Amino acid sequence: LQRQTAAVPGIAVVDRAGDAPYLAQVSATDTAAGGITVAVVAPVSDFTGHIRDLMVHVALVIIVVLVLALVVVRWTLASTMTTLGLLAEDAQRICEMDFSAPLPAHAPVRELRLLTEAFGLMKQTVLDRTSSLTESQQTLARLIQVGVAMAAERDVGALIELILHEAISISGAEGGTLYVITDDDELRVEFVFKQVLNISLGGRERAQIQLPLLPLYDPEGQPAFDHIAVAAVHQRTPI
Figure (cartoon, rainbow, N blue to C red):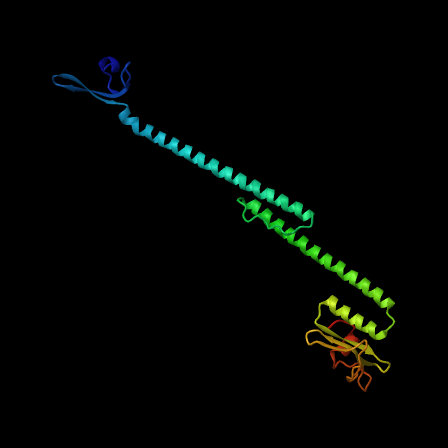
């Protein structure tokens, strides 16, 4: 010890060949009999062993966290690619006017969820516009057919019945009544059809309807508004 520390007071790390390093604390004390040198020696591992164990534990924790992070990243990437693939397939189906496929149920990333929701709104908008356009085309085709039939029809009663039936069909109503303005400024019921009540009066091959006439003007010559049909004639707007 004296050779290693030269008996110098203080703390020193002694590392001899073939031995584990140790920590030595040397102190000198003067007494009446002379100087006394006291040395306390302990292996360095007694002081640094717990630090080494802590470093091993930290390294193990870091390895476990990295493995878990790698698994999560791989799963997120796979889910993202799957969702993008489903959206691409759905976009291709929309190009073919096929709206039957559902949207992906879950997206792992917030931005991808927002993209999926926006894609769903766009898909619903395209579907609604397509349905509306299809209905408009069907209605236009019906109107063309009615126009052709009206041009070829010579029977007034049959023509009136055709007009009312087509108007009910196009508007989706449950029934309707057709009024005719007479030369005396009165409304005459020409045809009545109520599908729910199974009522069909007037029109082709039916007796004339015996209902009171509705005057368009009161005795003072002012427009009358005591009946919905009369009010519609004067206002010239749907009621």
